[in-house]
Amino acid sequence: MKIVGVIPSRYGSSRFPGKPLADICGKPMLWWVYNQAIKVNQFDEIYVATDDERILSCCKELEIPCLLTSREHINGTERVAEVAEKIVADIFITMQGDEPLMEPFNIEKIINLMISDSDIQCATLKTAYHDPVDVINSTTPKVVSDLQGNVMLFTRSPVPYPKSSLNYKIFKPMGLYGFRKNALLSYRGLKIGPVEKAEDIELLRFIENGIKVRIIETESKTIAVDTPKDLEKVRMIISRGERERLKLNFTYATANYPILNPARCC
Amino acid sequence: MRIACVIPARGGSTRFPNKPLADICGKPMVQWVWEHCSEVTLFERILVATDSDEIASSVKKFGGEFILTPKCETATERLYQVSCSVEADIYVMVNGDEPMILGKDIVKCIPDELPSDGFYVSNLMTKFKDPVQVVDPTNLKVVTNKNGECLFISRSPIPFPKGSMDFEYNKFVGVAAYSKKALDFYHNTEKGEIEIIEENDSFRFIENGIKCIYINADCSSISVDTPKDLDAVSKVLGRNSV
Image 1 (tube, rainbow over the protein chains, first blue to last red):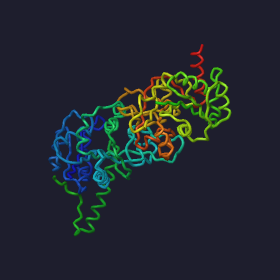
Image 2 (image 1 turned 30 degrees about the vertical axis):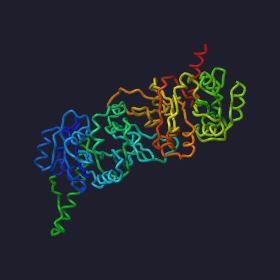
Image 3 (image 1 turned 30 degrees about the horizontal axis):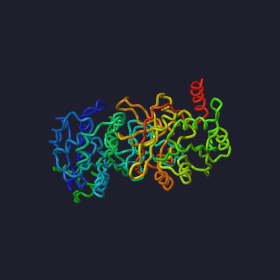
Image 4 (image 1 turned 90 degrees about the horizontal axis):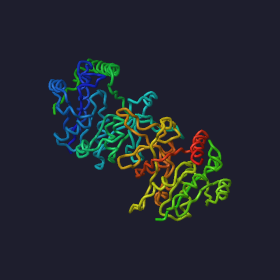
């Protein structure tokens, strides 16, 4: 079984131009994402998929495999679907280019879930919200799932509405998706429904077309970098981590502890 | 196909005691519902299912048929109780708090024939016309997939209009149709997590991955949950009967 990781990466939103190349401790954000991905042993190959020459040439410089894709895609899944037409694999895993703290164990969770049940066409993860502001904030989506672990709905409204019980967690869908090859290849041919249009959430394409999306709960401390303020937070966390590692490296110089994992070329 | 119509009407609503007997332009609410159900010729029987003697005697007075059921936690459970003694292929439920739904709309939840597996669940919905109603948490918002199968029902306004404003919100209407198999499933299945917090009977099916078809009846509906709803309904029904 061949498993390919893809990091779809646009040059930037209007809110944050050049986002994937933003500097974090001397490396572009994209490199940090890639660096997390290569810690996952199950990946046969990992690619950045972009529509931008600047990202392409940056990847070349850092020896990160990169594919140039169409400018026409309206979301990351459409971009990854184009990758699935060019690269042969059984399972594709999408990682977000703006989540440099994405935990490798969560990527492995999705891969293992998809390997364990060949009926799963698409899978993703959820974490419980802890901050009430995030629940009300429409930029952070919510997800509800049924008793078999299939997604019922992704929405930016706070759901479920606690009418008769407060004994429930509100869940956040994570930006990690697993796709079986055929599901991904079908994606661009599926009709965009009114709910996806309203919510602007890409996996609703499957949901509205009656294709199940499996979801499991996990823990995560990842931060999606949407604003320069988020970037500052991530920089602080990563630089703190790097200082710790340097300290270790100094104390145990002979242990050859890697300061930074070298990028692996697939 | 044998079709029975059941109007569940419980006496003890905590927020609104004896709600089905609330007066609307000189008639109890349950009579309005019963009269609209009587417009449907497909029904073999129309039964008000209640746990209240007071409601039962009111039904008797206006010439309707009633059936006494034990105290039930939900309207669908009351329907199940009826299905144990009244035989039919399809049970149509018209909630006792929906006095505005007409017979021509009620029939829209009835299938042409039962699916081969004998399992059928449908429910009516309509488009919201008043934005205030969308925000009101007593009105349930329905989201379906392209086949009309319910994805989610919430008291929160769903979906959230981020990418497009081109969306008409669907309002839950308290009219549903079940086959006997579906009612048995309902009775024998535990409440799920979401059903417990949102409190809607359809979740018993959709949380278990079972199709629940929501049909747009394109009708006007105000379900009476509070005295403020009763005022609104009295105005409309009063105007119509003048």
